[in-house]
Length: 264
Image (cartoon, rainbow, N blue to C red; front, side, top):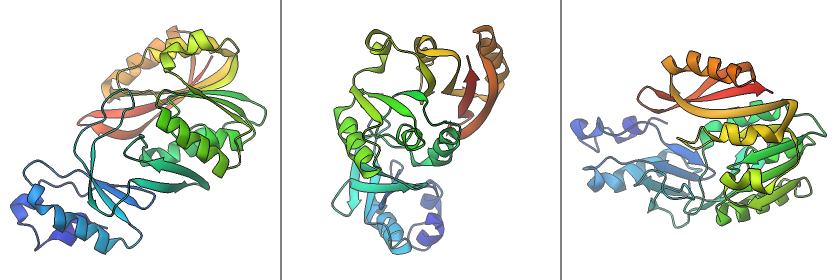
């Protein structure tokens, strides 16, 4: 639905221009970011979403960026009464409480793309595992997965989601800071999937020694387009074969999330 179209005639045009037409849907929850100065239009905005999308049970307003070690935004309930939901994505289901854990619904295709490369019998390492969207599909493909996540609430959701998807016997969950992975894990993996948070590119060097020669790393970084050729050269100088790279979403004006498929 077009949120701005739904709100025409309900909010003055000069004010409506400030509002983004995009909002996220996670399970049966919609998340909108209402700009400063438009707070008085919260009932109209939440009402337009609920009226235009009958599968939506709750509308949340994102009032802060991701904060703290748990990378959770401050969310205000505009309509409904719960931040808990079940999100469905390409045949998998995830138990999520958006007040306690982070989840990016816009990376669904990317998660499917990576999982399609996983072979049965592989060992896979997933730091920053969250509620498991990068960990559960590889496990369902027959891999043995080690998922590392420091947010205890996310670990609880991940455990529940593993049970919902019947892969609990293939996913080992470690509730710890990913920075300590080299100290905790000594084995070698066939593949590492690294959904790196903003500004943490050094994790590629930290995780790389845990991947066997000939293994694969899927690494995510935030860059402007002009930085990519130099980054490709840097990864090659580190000894990786850059098999492919792709842009998978903008995060700020000119800044995109880039996915690199690397072979060690």
